[in-house]
Image (cartoon, rainbow over all chains, first blue to last red; front, side, top):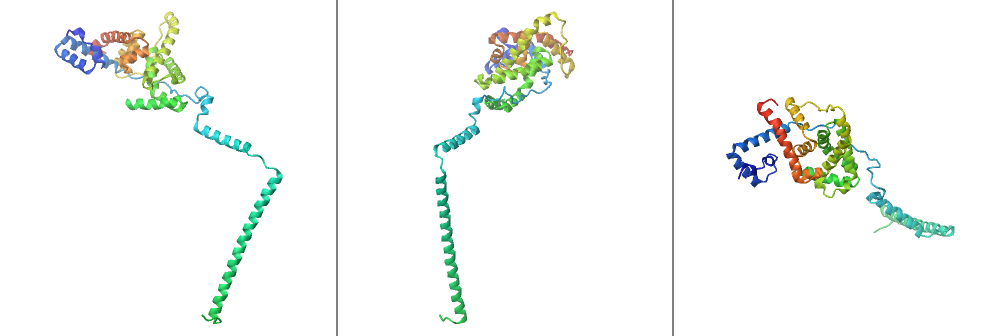
Length: 152
Length: 181
């Protein structure tokens, strides 16, 4: 192949595939003109690489203002908002679905609750007294045995 | 590079959902490259800074239109290219009539002579040629990606780059070989 078939710029820029690269290298090994062309390109690229990247004079940063905030409907998609919305709806539905009590019904419910409580306390007291009597009975028996009034 | 792309993908997904912090992180990863590219295109530090901010604002506003996050870099540089050339087009009539502007060279580099020679050689290129060099040599884009950023066929992007390299070689290589950079 003649020299014009080789793309030395693509070679120097790393754009050739492995096969084209190998062919170009084999040609350059035997062609001083192409070697010179390649050396010139490499020097040029090496010179260009000395130019360092410019540092911005200040940092670029954005704050969360209206431009960046999610649109109003996107707020509904957030899990926390959706959860709070479900709970609020449940409370509202519950409040409206259940009929409100009138005063008489409230008094009846309260009276029933009071009666239940009194009955529970009475039962507890009865149990405590029964236990107390049993303990006293046992004590008297132990005392009689110890004093020899009762013989086993 | 692969990790960077994976992390970028993640940040892009979060930013699309309105996460500004994720977007700021993405900006911090790209601002230096974008600023540097814009600075070399427009040759003015303040203009490059203003353009960088516009680029990242536009990118955020249009992030939902980016279907393939893997193409984020080419897409971002395409925005930067459009912003830079839109500004250059608006200013061209003024600058053509005005005295040549003293261009901002930026901080000194080592070796000083070589970097000055490179800067000077880059400035002698046409805007299109210089941009092709910036995208290929400094940003490492493939020919296809360059064409995407520039909005032109691959053959055009390649032709601009090759002409630019030929001019740069003529200017820089002899000085280097003589050690006179």
